[in-house]
Image (tube, one colour):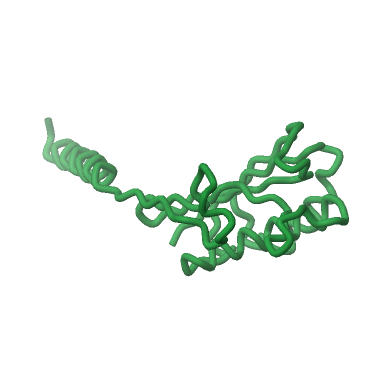
Length: 150
């Protein structure tokens, strides 16, 4: 082997060792909800792994009334995003920290109307997956979950 190849091999091996060591030592924190009525839920609002924050899906529920907002897909989308903002804020984050969104629509017929609201809030254009499924919680029209980086 030539010296260049030895150097390249050493760099690759040290990168693999450093990466596997970092993954073994990543602390997981299962954060309790900031909403008192959700603290007994069977899931965490946020799970933190190092500097990554994985948020549970949010629907368009007004937490003061515990009901889905009226007004259709756009009103629900706006409320779901406000709920995401509230959870992020509890951890010193904002929508600008979001790197990935998963969007579940009750119907793909709502795709264009959903996007009209979505683009106003997610101006950094995080990666996104969107699909439709029937039977969202509380008969919601949309659910959004995000991954954010601090």
